[in-house]
Image (tube, rainbow, N blue to C red; front, side, top):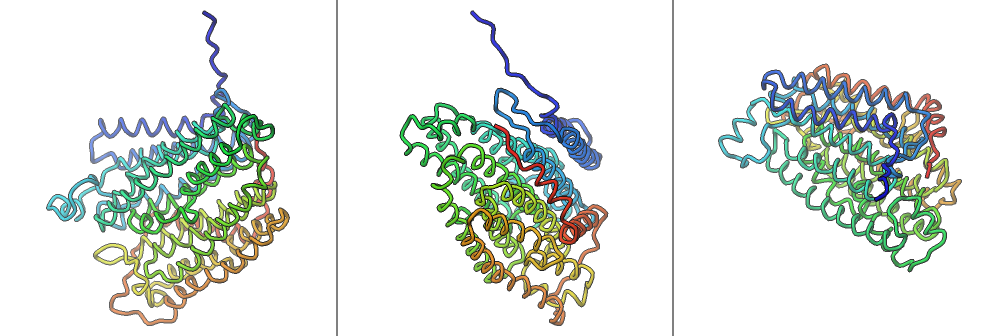
Length: 510
């Protein structure tokens, strides 16, 4: 019997993922051995230290270009940039998750499965300290996202998809307020996410039948010189794309987004809107640019139609919303369409501008949900738009910050939203996708209406009896808001450093 040759492993390249998974496992152990009174500080500190350590490792490995673990993981420019983005946005998300001064007991309950309305449920909703397992769950989710953007074969990508999806399903059910809505959101996300995972896995099986392998390089070679029916190729690509577009919140696979964004705890909604979008588009970029570049003319039109539908659905339905979290959900859908415009440029500028857009949008949306978590009354967050009338008179500072973020979403100059849209639209024109840019500009004008309506409502209407106060943010939320606002302004005024960084990183390895 011959010697078994194990694949070469570059542990330095894998270190960011290993750090987060190690911190997650350690967090689970701490839940069992650390007294409940001390868990919060220890778990939050552990999670923040792990994220910072992983980010430092990404910076140290910035020049690494390698395919490791037998071709399962590729660490290259896009991988390292996207991993760094997920870690930075993850730190800001964790600051929102860790805030406990705004609501007694924190935003999360200790037991999600308690029957809604029971005496036990009422007791835990009234201020009982929440469970701290939210931190290891978040670490598992972020670790899975790091692996997702680095996966160089489809089975590894599927495993990473499940690793970061399952904790998110659980986290969505932990909201302290509106318990039934939170549990409903988690169930919807789980059921629809399971269908999307099944589509993805079935697509992997068809692509294996076409190419005889699941790694992206072998699929690329088989696309260039097909030996089997191309029906397997296109059916497999369609099913894999469905799985990825579901996570990206692209239409018509977006139906989970408004309900889940509304029902999940607001810090978890922020985490999904920022970090999950980076992970989903990072994987989509790698699959399309590395494995299926040879059939770009076949999928470009189909995905272009999906991009147009996504922009239209997000922009038009955002106008009809009366809940702030649902409005931001449809805004997220529309932004997924703009990101697809950059992806479909299928050139280096498209890759770099899409990565820039992901970072810019991530910081802005985290700041937006940070403000949403502060506008509250005795019953919790006041998310109905009518409750925001006159908010600028009662809390001009926070209304001003939120107005600035909404102007960034609308793409007003001197904000990151303008720079990022300009970048992806310019790359799409260079890539011959001018028709997508036309739809992008039209839908951007449509989408500006609900943003401006909220601004007018906050500043030009008188406060009513139902207008809530804005809670004084704790240190963690204040830090998250400051980071989000500064990044939104800086990337609009001086975007060149980040644009140069994305341009240098825009090269995949096979």
